[in-house]
Amino acid sequence: MADKTAKLHLNGQDYDLPLLSPTKGPDVLDIRKLYGQADVFTYDPGFTSTASCDSTITFIDGDKGELWYRGYPIEQLAAKSSYLEVCYLLLYGELPSPTQMEDFRARVTRHTMVHEQMHNFFRGFRRDAHPMATMVGVVGAMSAFYHDSTDVNDEWQREVAAIRLIAKLPTIAAMAYKYSIGQPFVYPSNDLDYASNFLNMCFSVPAEKYEVNPALARAMDRIFTLHADHEQNASTSTVRLAGSSGANPFACIAAGIACLWGPAHGGANQACLEMLREIGTVDRIPEFIARAKDKSDPFKLMGFGHRVYKNFDPRATVMKESADEVLDLLGVGDNPTLQVAKELEKIALEDEYFIEKKLYPNVDFYSGIILEAMGFPTAMFTPIFALSRTVGWIAQWKEMIGDPQNKIGRPRQLYIGSDRRDYVDLKSR
Ligand code: SDX
Image 1 (cartoon, rainbow, N blue to C red):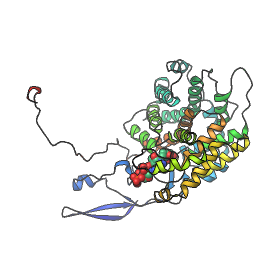
Image 2 (cartoon, rainbow, N blue to C red):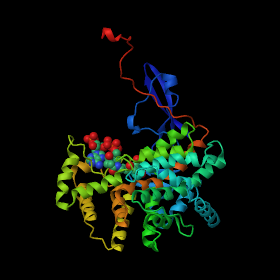
Image 3 (cartoon, rainbow, N blue to C red):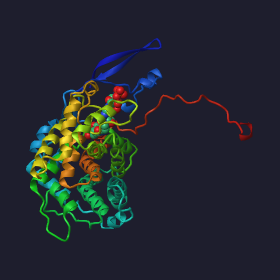
């Protein structure tokens, strides 16, 4: 991939740094030998200018607002594909044939139940535990229940772990929800599609028949697809870093869930809806816009801004269309929170500060409005993001494990602490 070089002149020496050419996107300066040759580190806290790996899975163009899974634009996948087909695409790199799709669906379906002993594991949590806390714990504990698929050096075990995670995360997320509201767990139904099964496990009760609304199932499935993968974001990088030490796949995914929980990342969908509720009415929007611009105020507009997207988040565009459809379907098109969101988006996009800082609605801005309309409490928004992203984390983890260049991730630092000094006895201080 290196057909060009960049020259670095440092301390009287010249160094040739290979310039790696991507399929698409910026060239990459290969600095792997820099420390060995020039005895210097590079410095990039937050990794704003750093490629941590090469990957064939997802491409993002932040300026053009493009997002591709294995080369296919997200808008086409959201409109024409299904989440389970997108899972196959992310895991194996190609769209499945009808036979491959049926086989994959059957394998996932056969793994949707969790070990019965996990029901007791849930009962160790307080009922009011945040579902993300439960999911971090239960997914991490999968390494104890599914020990026969934890050997990362065994390709078959890696494959089984991938299928188990994709199949069981909806069941675990639904169990976390049911546990938090004191309702009995609902077992998966193998005659339902992936999204319908999740809605059924969340909203059905043994006491009465529950019919999944196909339009809501379609919207749920689309939300899963929009969140499935997103290049080397914070939680994916966490999964890769955990995986680089050889940790088992369940531990790596639990680490990803923990990272995703942060309000700057996947926790933003919950924080965004809570912010929209706090704003309450359209006339209070200017007050919050002013706070977002006030450097002395830590307040940020949740659901706005993105490290990569600097024009628009293509997922937010699809999500906004879906919000209109779902709320109209549910007869809550005049939902006050949606009205505040639309007016906030309009005002912010015309405001100099947001234009200058290139702040646009991201994937989390509208998702919470749809999920709330579907009946989910805000605490379930990030667990739904986590179950959607599990396939992306697993695909990236598999790619890393299968990479012959794979080695443990171990960044260095710019040390600015004390120089060497000798210990002083307590009586002498
Ligand atoms: C996700 O990386 C991914 O791909 C993530 C994700 C995925 O699919 O995995 O897309 C999912 O995490 C989406 C982002 C969800 N987070 C939020 O909505 C929280 C609010 N957004 C911000 O916290 C922020 O925008 C980030 C964290 C998303 C991005 O932060 P960056 O890239 O580090 O940018 P920054 O914080 O340095 O902001 C640049 C400037 C700053 O001002 P200056 O220091 O230059 O004066 O813009 C300002 C920030 O203060 N700014 C905001 C703002 N976001 C950034 N000001 C007000 N409101 C905001 N939301």
